[in-house]
Length: 385
Image (cartoon, rainbow, N blue to C red; front, side, top):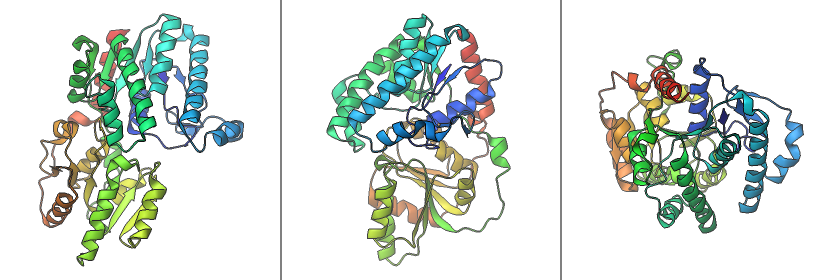
């Protein structure tokens, strides 16, 4: 049984990598019967279609359209109640509860369903926010990502409760070894941690490769449009390069809460001709990625894997990213990626050098194929049956 993105119904088709990757893995494991709980979610990432009329959810969607802490709390309570009710009603249909993320809106219903049905639960751990179990440190993590004080405190308190739930889970599935080390540092037993790198469907992506494609952009960014993705640094670098009479262009692909503010900053700096902002794109993003000279990821978020970096590697696009232990583990061995300290001037210098450079592209990304990822996940889950 899977519980997915609780905010999916509020922002249809806007999902994080965790939800998308879980869906792609689950859809490939045909040997296991899945019962999927997605109450109040207009768009079903698992089936890639709307599963209920929009009109039916319009009052709730309107109520929660401008979110704040109180509305988030109400939303979470409603979502949790619907999940638990569906879990209890269908308790004879499953023997294992699977929380697809460590988001409280996923793991809390999973924990309750596990308690009332007396069936074990597992958790998929995608994001590196738990550097240590102390609330103050976790609070600082959220503040570093530009969240408000109140929001950071609530998130930190919930994260601390989440650590308790992780300790009580039958297994915690981590998408890189660094995350497993984090969980051990939080007091979670090593034998409760299973490791499985994320994967991409390289066979499908191969069909989208275009040889000798003309370049339209110097820089490409793909990801959620949030403050902690470092896009202000990128915009400021492009402004500096323009003032130095450099002919520079960029495309920013994605959606998120920072999107309108980002567009306003671009307009205020007079960079509309230098920076294209597309919003969320499906596979079309791969065309724009291949039409770019380099991929830049100036994120200072607590990343868990870096799927967009893997996409750029597959399409032979060299990469600049702010360094992170996850990126060092997963991508550090590839010569076409440059990991740098978080610094705007260093980012600018690295972009200029990379635009003039030549690179050795990766010859083997097989460990990160979706096929191998599914095999590893299947072996883990079969051991739990």
